[in-house]
Image (cartoon, rainbow, N blue to C red):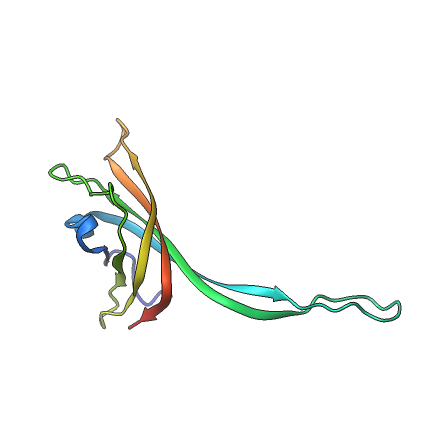
Length: 129
């Protein structure tokens, strides 16, 4: 059984998306670790199994928000911004770190509300508090 639901959460990205934290519909974070192949050539005719060691870790993510009809996000300059993705579980736990916005797609559909989808790349460690 889940410990918390997705109904409480926010994304804060400094001045680029001021006011959009209230309009976020969903967000995701992906944490990855490179796997480095260190397999050596075998002697004899035995079956060869690949061997790996852990490499560098990285993180990235995305979010989707409804576009506010009073102000568009300033995406003319993708400057470095301090990003915080939070979820509330009664203890205000959150993920945070420095991010670079990599791309944003604006969508407007006659059958739905206008939205913006943005992807970001984490730089440095992802903090969990």
